[in-house]
Image 1 (tube, rainbow, N blue to C red):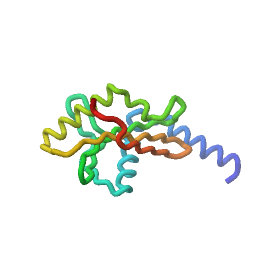
Image 2 (cartoon, rainbow, N blue to C red):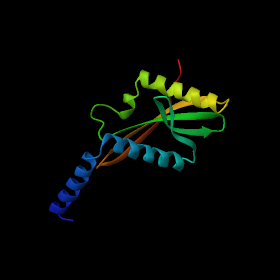
Image 3 (cartoon, helix red, strand yellow):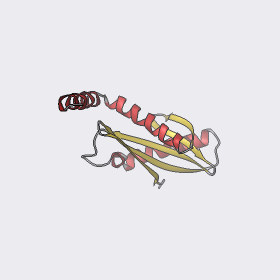
Image 4 (cartoon, rainbow, N blue to C red):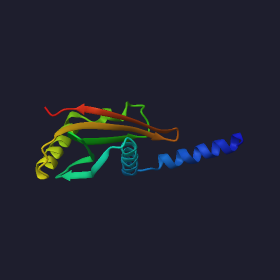
Length: 137
């Protein structure tokens, strides 16, 4: 591939990434997170679980606990890693949703809260799985 072709391919990929809406980027990130978890042989039991206005992106089960995952995807980490966008307020919303899930399904297992932080752009996809990222207060 010559320099012109290389520039054209890079530009085309860049243009496609930049035209992606926030929702499309979020959906792409959640799909990449599910693939990532399945490769780790983890059993996903629910996706996009909603309670009122709250949502948990992914729920998976370990032998002794249920894990609730928030996925944050960005095209750049210039303003900081995506996981930093999971504020204490957002954590409280996830915890409320998790509580509803466990009580409505009558599950008596411990809850764990993870964050999967993804940067996805024309350089590649970078995934960070932060286990036990936060705890209920």
